Figure 1 (tube, rainbow, N blue to C red):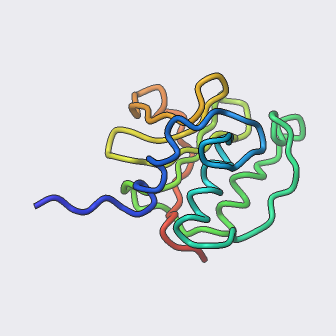
Figure 2: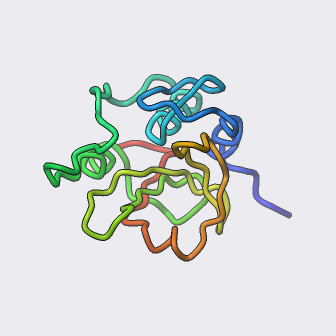
Length: 141
């Protein structure tokens, strides 16, 4: 007997096909990777846990500040390595972590990419190597 799909994953799958739009968080209209997480959170938990200030596409890379990681660690518990976990990626070795996705299966994740929108991608070796943290989206601190 298979386990039911986590609510987070079921909600995230409904965002697939949403176009990429920086700083947006509207299913079907547009979102970036953080907007996807925010929208899924609202659908599953209600209001967002914290306001999100405006941010540039480079996040805090020029300053070298791990703002996204710090915010996630402040608001969420560590991930369990299960579908529904928030994945935080470092896109380049020396860069700050600034990409987010939701683990949708042991070897797949849902995320929003510029030029692609919200897609479900294989968690291939290159993607897996970029993961720097996992957080539990089912609950909050």
